Each structure stands twice: as C-alpha cells, then as structure tokens.
Image 1 (cartoon, rainbow, N blue to C red):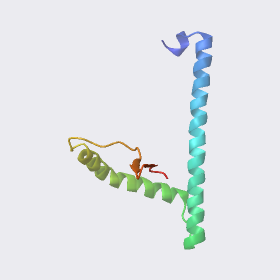
Image 2: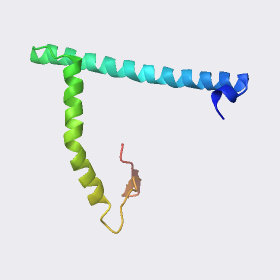
Image 3: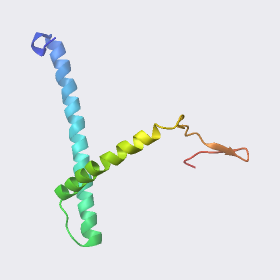
Image 4: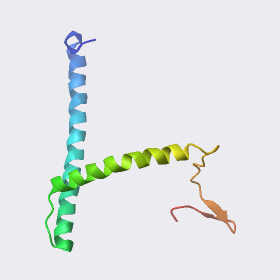
Length: 102
C-alpha cells in the first residue's frame, strides 16, 4: 500500500518511525564526529601535529578497502574445517569455574 493510500493514523505512525530512525542516525553521526575530534586532539597532544578528521576518515576507508580481501580470505578459511568451535563458556580448573572475563 502506498503512503498516499494509507489512513492518516498509518501515515503518522510511519512518520514517527522515520523520525526515530533519523534520530538514531544523528546520534551515531555525532558519536563518530566526537570520536574523530578526540583522535585529532590525541595526535596534536602526543605527536605534536594536527590532523584533520577528514584525513582520518579517508585513511580509515582506505584501510577498510585494503583489508576487505584479507577479511574474506579469513572467513573462507574458517569455514573449511569440518567443525567450528564457537563455545565461549569458561573452563573448570581444580573444581573452580574460570570464566573468560575473570
């Protein structure tokens, strides 16, 4: 059903849902922006030179692109064994449960 064929209540619900999605995206973008600002400050404070957030984004994108083939190879390699162990439970050693995070 097209939006123009929907009842006013359905259109309002759709708009509210879309506004929620937009709000979530805005929060994520703000968090990323804050992260990049922290990284630029870190470079400035520790290394003594300024780097723009755009440079960080471009470098990050370049790294992701270069690592994509490696990531696919690793995924393919991990699918090769007859069984893959995904169990993350802890082990009992001397009758004591030792969780991975402890």
